[in-house]
Image (spheres, rainbow, N blue to C red):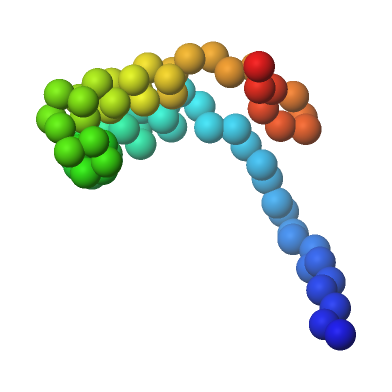
Length: 72
């Protein structure tokens, strides 16, 4: 039987993404994100709405706790 043992990770930090991180992700991947939206919708207008909705959603405040995001 295979046994799995967790290895300690030294100096591990878990930081939350900031608004600036999301902004940077959208700026650096605008073309590929829009292309993905277009490939999923096969419609330029729907792809634009999808992309803008994702951008709006990314900047909405999301309540969270140490155990993870709160869904509601």
